[in-house]
Image (cartoon, rainbow, N blue to C red):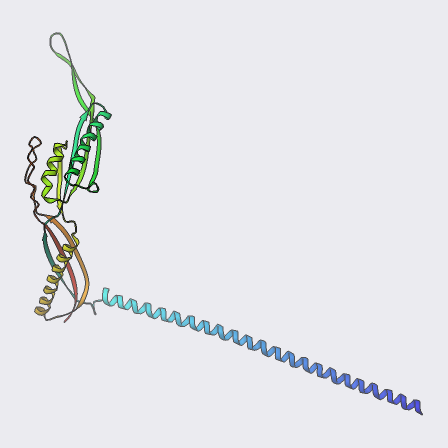
Amino acid sequence: MIKKKRKNKIKLTIREKKKILRADEKKKLKKEKLKEKQLNKNNCCRFWNFNLWLRLTIILILISLLIYVIVAVMSGLKEYKYIGGEINYQETITVEGMGEVYATPDVAIAVFSVKNEAKTVAQAIQENSKKMNEIIYSVKIEGVDEKDLKTISFNLYPRYEYYEYEYIEDEGDVLQADGKRVLVGYEVIQSLQVKIKDMENIGNIIQQATNSGANQVGALSFTIDNEDKYKEEARQLAIEEAKNKAEQLASQLGIKLLGIKSFTENINGSFLGAYRASIDMLEMTSPNIEVGQNKIEARVNIIYKIQD
């Protein structure tokens, strides 16, 4: 009897174990299903998040394109309105003003040249350079700074002469005439530009240069060292004249000036003096130089937008 009871007790224990195992398996299976379900849910959320960002990006791109199209259309309409359109054309008037300022030049520009001939290149250059160096030395003595001296040209040319030959018979009749070009030497021309700031000493400087070997003096001109302030003054006068004209026109036509649409200007100067004394290379007297005045002229064109 005791053995039976033990046997039954063992069987009951095995069942319980099996029961427990089945319960554990069910719990494990349930956990795995819950885990899989949670994983699927997370994946689904990620997918929807990605789609959300994608949709937002596409929406932003579409909005940007729409704004670009609207701006382009508005720009086109504006261009048509003010450039090519006839319905809302912006009416304008154009006025011109002129201003003149006269000023006494304070700088003279002179060009001294040495022209000489010789049989050889070396001899021609040597003689020319010697005379030009004497000219430079003489103008420096008269107070011209070295920075105001500038060699603007140096030219060397060959010199030819044409010889004719005639073949004559004993009776004196010309049978044939012929010619030949022969190289007889070289010519050198060197020019020096001198900037003279002592206006009262122009004649003496020219005389000293010619005495030192300059056999050509030309391109004498007068300018103003600081011309900007005179240009500004002429511009201001021209603008005032143009503004006065515009206001008078507006009053006479019964229109209103809305503002300036465009502005252009042209400023130049002209020399009114003269170099009246001719330079005689044989005389020792200094030439009289009349500086005169420079005219700085400014012209402006102003286009005003108007309204009836």
